[in-house]
Amino acid sequence: MTVASLSPEGEASKDGPTENALLGGRVRLLQPARGYRAGMDAALLAAAVAAGPGETVLEAGCGAGAVLTQIAARRPGLGLVGVERDTEAAGLARRNAELNGIGDRMTVVEGDVGAGFKALGLPRADWAVSNPPFFDDEGALRAPSPAKRGAWIADDGLAAWVGFLTDGVKDGGRIVLIHRADRLADLLGLLGVKCGSFGVRPVQPFADQPAKRVLVQAIRGGRAPLRLLPALVLHDRSGTKHTMQAEAILTGAADLGF
Image 1 (cartoon, one colour):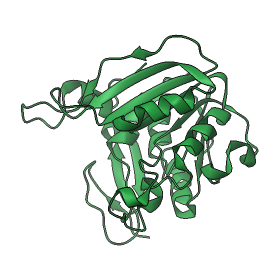
Image 2: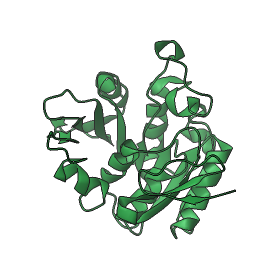
Image 3: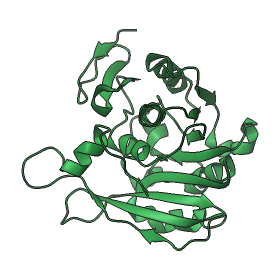
Image 4: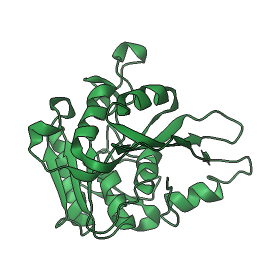
């Protein structure tokens, strides 16, 4: 396969995967030239995981490994487990683990979230994270291309993804998701069956516009009150690409904690 070396905004080549630089060049990521390509949501999810040395992070639907490789660059000494049903994407995730020098502590398992966590026979993790597909109903949007369908459509619904994460984390462990802001009530309701101590951080395109994304953290067995945190504003009207806070997070100079 041909691999092209690109900037963070690099254009996809027509042949084979392309290589992108993330976190200000600290992470190299091979991605499919066509189909779903990781972007800002993956970077924000990785920035919201405050795992400590020796802990394990499980990702449901890891794709090519954009989230896990960025978590590894931010948080040395972690164990990383990705679950991915697409064989090609899982293969790229393994290649990206080696490319970034974390092949000895990142495992990629081929499995379907819809089958449940217990079907994989894996130990429960300290952290479970995901950027689930945003839609449950293909009739609700223009049909995505076949190469992007798996990343856009949750065949088994959002409940299957939340159930997978909840079962995959230890008691007292933390779950972190990024999703559409209009699904916040659904997320809290599904997580609330076994989790609590919620932290919610809205993500707004501009300060004067409603949030389009939310980052949600929950603790399995947690009982503390919900905390609504200050929003992350991605852009301002100055003409710069990102606000100073967003730029610091995307380049790895700052975290996005709860």
